[in-house]
Image (cartoon, rainbow, N blue to C red; front, side, top):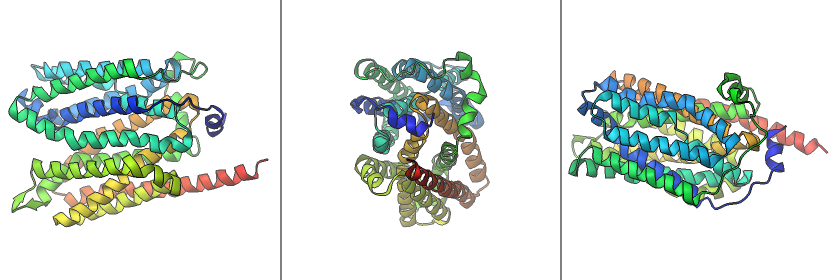
Amino acid sequence: MDPMTADRGDTPQRVSLLPVFLIVLVDVFGMTLVIPLLAIYAETLNATPLQATMLISVFAACQLVSGPLIGHMSDRVGRKPMLLISQIGTFIGFIVMARAQVLWMLYLARVLDGATAGNLSLAQAYISDHTEPSQRAKSFGLIGIAFGIGFFIGPSLTGYLSAKYSLTTPIYLAACMSALSILCTATLLKGGRQSHHAFDDREGAFQWKTYAKYFTRPGLRERLFQFLFYITSFSMFISGFALFAERRFTYQGHPFGPREIGYVFGYVGFLGIILQGGLIGRLVKRFGESTLVAAGFVALAIGYFGLGIASSFGLLVVTGTLAAFGNGVIRPALTSLITQQAGRQEQGVVLGITQSLMSMASIVAPIVAGLLIEHRMLTAWAWVAAGLAAIGVALSREGLTFYATASADSIGTP
């Protein structure tokens, strides 16, 4: 069955997406409360720098495996049950992390969280289930708003709580936020879509060919690779920017510190709230998702390239604005295009694949960024991110060509 035809022929049931927004917002707050202090917390348990940074890679490696499996199962049993399982795993992970007395308990916490990690992809699948294809980019913008608010407030709150109380205080708060998210899902979220005819063979969930076939499907293949290059470029930036800014920029004669870096992230998060809160729907209506994705990759490539040669705060603001625009339009528009290239019964597994691609990027990109910055290759770090975005531009051309051909064929079909 043609996935695009299947999408059109199966009208989604409209429901309020406010509970999904609240669920994602609470989850993002939990994540942004913990991530900024994770390495420092690990050092209090006698971790070496490598052991501390590997906590991110361990989580990503577990998520790489669990993402498609959880998405696959949600296509069979429904979104809500799997979302609850995923959130309970995150809650238990936070509790174990806060109670950790030795380093292996911290690793156990990350394994538990990563092995059940599927909150974001399941929320996206739920949105896809209940929105028309033409409205998905705007609806996925809700997730972007949640991320913007989380990154705008979370790290600052962590700094305050850890300084005034202890390193475990933000973690316990994250656990409380996770428990609130579970409560919201259980009481506010209507049952997600369940497919009774897709993926009936349970063993298929554990076979690579179940997922590899999506990378051979024209149209979807290009979009998945675009997502891989986008998220790898973004991971290069997000994992290395603090170290880059500390070495490159000064404020009142002093190197950038956590306060200045936090302000930059806050500015980018604020722009994301504005862009995805009110503009993304209008931009999609006027230009279309494919054009926005291409424009976003161009903005990212120029922004990251400029960042590599930036030496003043003013140029940093300009390049940061370009990067914020690129990230703000690519994620919702590209996610919408991916869902439109998959059948209604495939939404969970396809979005689970995108989460695994995010995990792959989170494993590799921080290592590359760290090595480049450690060797003082600051410009190369930014230009690698720009090069990855440039590949996304090239794939955008292929995607636009595919859509032009598909449109011509549909016009000629009686």
